[in-house]
Length: 77
Image (cartoon, rainbow, N blue to C red):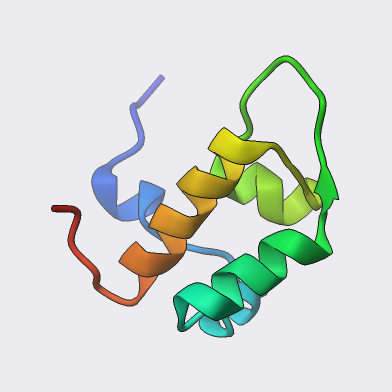
């Protein structure tokens, strides 16, 4: 079995691109997070799964926010 490369991991699906493309500002990211259901699950969702499931708790939301910011080239500091 081959391991995925960074190039394959960094690609978003067309549907994910459509959603992430609208999350250009912190306010847009927060508005999106406010529009999805809060998760009381005892596991974490990666950003892709948050987009697919439309569920997130605080940590999941923070990871999605970081991914959305990174989508537009923001660097972690």
